[in-house]
Structures are given as C-alpha cells and as structure tokens.
Length: 142
Image (cartoon, rainbow, N blue to C red; front, side, top):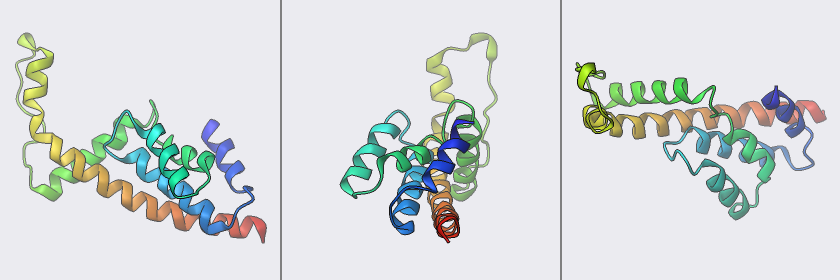
C-alpha cells in the first residue's frame, strides 16, 4: 500500500519527467544493489549530489524491503551464478553441527555471484523503471 501511494505521488512531482524518472531509476538501482545496509543514506546522498528529488529516489530505494529482499537477492545471486559459471549454488551441509561461521564459509563462494547478479539486475531494473516512469509522468501530465 505504501509503495502504490508513493508511486502515485511521484507522478505528480513538479519536475521535468526526465528528472523524476532519473530519480526513481537511481533509487531502484541502489535498492537492488548489493550495498545492503546503506541504501537509504546512499540514495539521499546521490540524489543530493545529482540534484534529483530525494523523495522520489527513496521510493525507488524502498523497492527492497523486508517483503521483497529475499526474492530480489536470491534471484540476483542466481543470475550472478549463471553469469560466472558457478554450478553448485547450495552446498551439502551438516545441519546438526551448524554455526554462523560454518554457514559463512559454506556460502562464501556465492559472494561474487551475489555482487555481480544484484548489480546487473539493478541496472536492468533501473533502465526499465526509467522508461516506465518517464512515460507515466508524461502521460499523467498530458
């Protein structure tokens, strides 16, 4: 509900359509990036540096939230694994002797696929978001 309401709001932001679309696309890219934990600060900082609307950027950033983060990052890791030729994504594990240290060691081979796949997915999603928002803002004002 929050996202739909904010999406409606960004269609009425009093800025050129290209700037609204660029702000949202930047937010989408940051939100899907592997820079987990600094999305909000990075979104505000880059919007400020690029003179884009901070609210519109943050709406895009928050596409990654507690409800969407697992599917977005799982898909990103899968894409990265395919791109980098990683064949065994899920290792065989002894769940009876599991610890955080063992878990991190077992999944270490997925760090680069996570980074590559999330970045690629974020860039593609940002390009699509730019086109969709640009067209939507133009049509809404039209």
